[in-house]
Figure 1 (tube, one colour):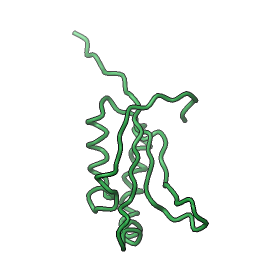
Figure 2: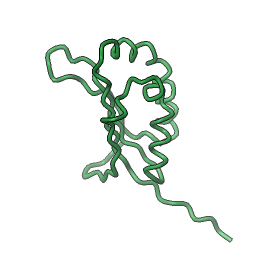
Figure 3: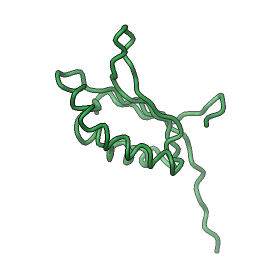
Length: 109
């Protein structure tokens, strides 16, 4: 009997930071843990693209994160996101976070 493996799908994650006072400093304080976990997901091929969202003003302040995640389901993506220190530590704004299926029109590394 053979095992059927689901084909991974891609999802985009828009994870804006909270806008309350102290969020930016809190982001920086937990960033090493976030980067460590992020790198593991990149090495495992789960996170295909990711980065920091910047404010459009001249300051270019970090205001959130964007990810393209490869997973079997949106629930799997939610589990990954909800385990991230930015989520558990309250950096990302859970109410404004968006996770959607994504189909690329160009190659993704």
